[in-house]
Image 1 (cartoon, rainbow, N blue to C red):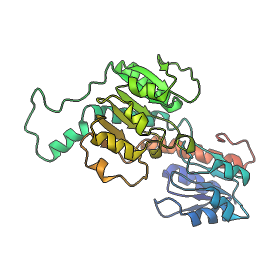
Image 2: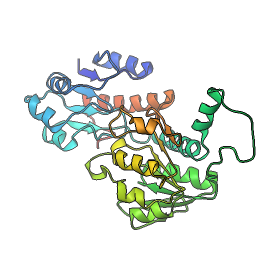
Image 3: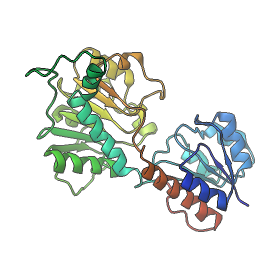
Length: 317
């Protein structure tokens, strides 16, 4: 029977199906695979179902030597933790789970935008601490997002889902930056430069894929182009933002706030961010809904099934 390693537990409905089809090994931890585990898995498993943080680096492929594995069926759309080029050179296919995560991740972007703009997390902390003294006309005034301009960095599936929600849900004008020309079915304007988007936007939402090409794409210069009343939201990968530059801008009050679901050195979150009332911090909840995680798991498993049957992989990256 084909040997399948699942790096961390996925919803039980998918686990049960996997156990009926494969010789499954499930790691008994929620922590990412270590380098040595990655090397050993490449040598010993036919298929690996990894996820965020399982670092299948070029050195892991190199050290593995005789590689048995034929597929890394990634659980998640982002696969910047896998060196896809090294995998290809080693004869290992890589798949992901596009589409399944789109709406859930866009919803979290909306959650962060509204929570940051309307100071929701700050207000909840006030109530829970027993410090709220009642309503008054100038209490905790935030940014009214309806009719404002949202700038979206990255106009893939998730970026387009965000654009639809912002335009049709909140009447926002949409401008965006994308590394290639993109035509979308939402009234929106593609701007030539990233800084142009930052300068024109009341809210900026970052939705680019992770990887070397987007590392620190939101740096000190780019953040410096934003308006002082604007807020920055990140639902992509943590290291697309230079976290130190973001902290500096927030401390200097050249940026009004930030909503973050991901972090540059995740799961480490800087104390400076935790200390700020104008920052909303979520623990990477982008796809955290059971039906979404089940769909992701099914999509990953379908790729495993296709490989075992000698069929074309549905989601080859």
